[in-house]
Amino acid sequence: MSTPRRCAVAIQHVGFEDCGTLAPLLAERGWQLQTLQAGIDALDAAEDAALLIVLGGPISANDTPHYPHLHRLHALLRSRLAAQRPTLGICLGAQLIAAALGARVVAMGASEIGFAPLSLTDAGLASPLRALVGIPVLHWHGDTFSLPTGAQRLAATPACAQQAFAIGTHVLALQCHAEVDATGIESWLIGHADALHRDGIDPCTLREQASRYAAPLAAAARDLFGHWLDALPLPTAAAEAARA
Image (cartoon, rainbow, N blue to C red; front, side, top):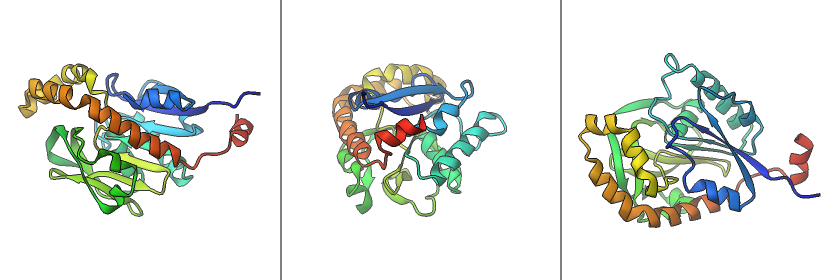
């Protein structure tokens, strides 16, 4: 009998903010990736997924009065985190994880948009994020969060003190977009055209940065996510088959 493929579920808020370079890495490692559309699809499949990935989006983790699906997503994350089940949050996903752990999510007062390297803490240098040393990653956010109790701060930028945190080996939260396939940046530039205009950011600058940094970022992200996946506390194949 063949070994069942591990199931990863990604919750996506906008079509172009997808798993990026993480998707082919998961496939190579035998993961079956299912993508659910936030606010549209039921999230039941995310409850028992071996890995949950919560992706970015232009709404706030505090927008529950306007986007009711966030209530369900907050509850889902609280349940998974309490059970110490592997969970990865990116941008909005990181903010939602922080909120589920009792931290505050607040507006920065100015957006951080563009490619720039991270400054890693000692804990960050000892983590899979060491793959990003000297590598400009994509930043695209206007909110930030306080560090949750029990979390290790991994990275910062001059504009944002909270760029990444981890809890054990089962939770990784990234404010930045290490996962982005920057060869597809045009979808971001079109999809976020209003935000770029509002913040006075020239899309030509981002397009040039993406062209320059796409390859090194993809290689570094493969290293980062590969090492993080290797360290996940996953159940055995027999235990997963028994749950199915």
